[in-house]
Image (cartoon, rainbow over all chains, first blue to last red; front, side, top):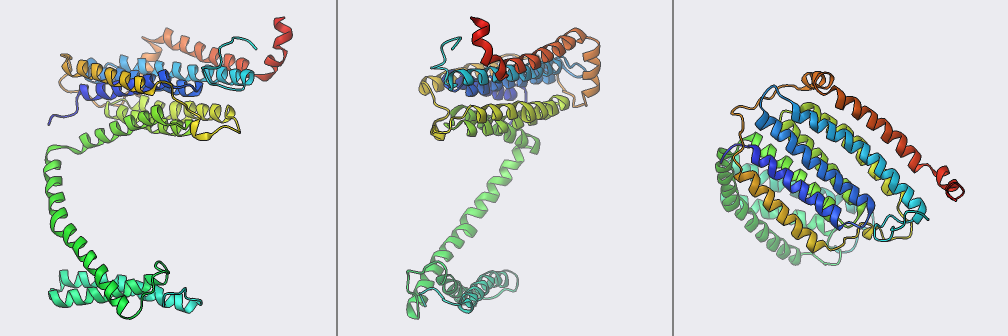
Length: 105
Length: 282
């Protein structure tokens, strides 16, 4: 049995990405779709940091810098998207994406 | 003695006999183990102790079962036999097998590897709970475990600052925002079990299986140029230096993006804008 290497982390990232994609594709609740997007961003971050650790080598941290930027953009995206969800809810009284198909009241 | 003891004294008597019986079971086992008590006295003492336990429990648990005299002895014998079989099974068969397997297992797997698998299972189980739960509150809490598992994986990869940022921003910020949004958009009358309905779940699961298979095949079969000895050094200082030298422009742009997102979120979610929007638009 070999030690933990790069493929182990890539497989975890792949599973995380796939589950996030399922969440985005199958959910009808807008907040649920947002949670799927967060899972996908986490999967990308795991891959970034795994490649930084195992491929880029000691002393180089470009992958970690990228992961920090991804986290920053995820925070901004969550704030904006949840504000939009609240606005949609105030307009339509539902956040089911099957029923919110108008851009105005 | 089957009826409920009407006064406190009978209760206390039952309770005392129950405790004495439990102590007798444990004490006899210890005597047999360490003082080399013979087999026949051990079995006799255990039987007496089990009888005491059954009589004590009779006042609390089996109120519909009238146990007294001979019935009590027979019932105790049956319970004693079952307990003896279970104890023999556990002590004679399961425990040696378990210890043997564990010893062989630990020979192969190091503790760090076990921790990695624990974090990986935590992450994937949390993500699966988020993807497949029918209640959106449960989905949000499952995502908490996914985030914590990912932070643990970061620690394994020598990324201490991203791990702490993950816990603070995702768990402390984004998850709280999501929970707020769920609470604010919940309708009172709707069924809480169906707040997170699915659309075409079999197709989605098939899609996930195909994606995991393809990506895992690629991850395992690709000839990655890995470094021989990855380092585990603190990265916070190096990250700060990188942000202020090589990545200064992206860093400033990220600051502006965050400010714009803050202002935009306030403007979009504010109620007053929406109330006047008709007059403004028309």
